[in-house]
Length: 233
Length: 231
Image (cartoon, rainbow over all chains, first blue to last red; front, side, top):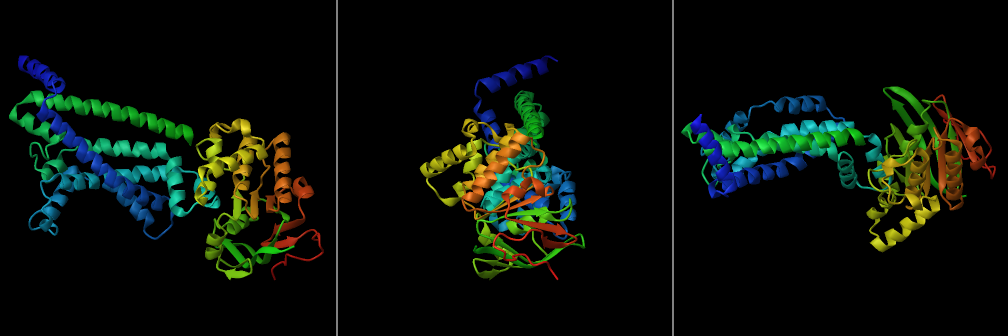
């Protein structure tokens, strides 16, 4: 019990004394996950929009597929990316394994199904008149699409927050494709896993608190935007 | 009067059921047409096809004397033909931004846009609403914003889908006033309605969409027959 109290006290010291190692881990985590979201969002919004507004063969299967892919374990995505970028893999020559780039790719793939499924629901719920009004007022398809995004922005923001919450806390994919290299690919979840197995709880607790705070903030934002979405619809 | 747009051999079916088949539909310059018919006759669908929002099964379109496919005509007519929904959709932004929406696509300077928006606000009598979010307006106010937003683009043809349904008499009167002024400004108008008598005083012609065909109910002002029932 004493050692746990001491570890907790030390974790506060690490957090508030500006411990370089700790803050590099936090920065790496945010940097990788933000880049992954920035890559996944435009692709996901476009796929979700097409699924919501076009009728084509295989559409229902596509919707069901993205819905099912939400539950793919992070470690399976990690394994897939690992195999693709491993030395004997099809993209092994790119030498991306154990780099932040491979982590970004893995997290983007992990975020994509969730983003598609949630933003599809937002686009599906959008009033048909949004698109038609934009078009009849002279907007070209790209402009009408941006107008539609603006009109369903609360639902889309909620999708973005939910996806960010998923990838910043995942450990399986980052551990496999990043390699948990200190100062380069070690992020919050992989650092917590490592420090805990080493019995070094102070840093793990400090990083755990960061994740907990982030989860609270993200959930607060999620509730806010989902509420705004309902009110504005 | 000059013909602006002509649809020939226009056919539309929904879920395998023929909705209408129209031999010729011509839209004349500065002409107001009332399009009546029972609920489900296809009035809204016909307007949406003309607006380029819904594809017909088949049609030939003649625009400014050029024969075009429906798809090409829709692209060509963008901005020239404006469709107003039964309950117009206003974007979740200020009244000013709503009115300026179409103009921003036309490469005008901010100064020109501002001037035109001010003029449109005054025209519709909604200057006092300019900074309000359009979502917070009443039904009648929304309708006036929608008219101003359409008029600012100087359309050649305005398609109004039941523009006065669910309105109180004051808002209805204001809508009629705006339709009359638009007509005086040279805009060709088609008004879909299931209560022709309410709009009769504004229109030059009455078309009835019934049993899958379009029938001319009143003689045209110049005596020339412009609508030929299919078959």
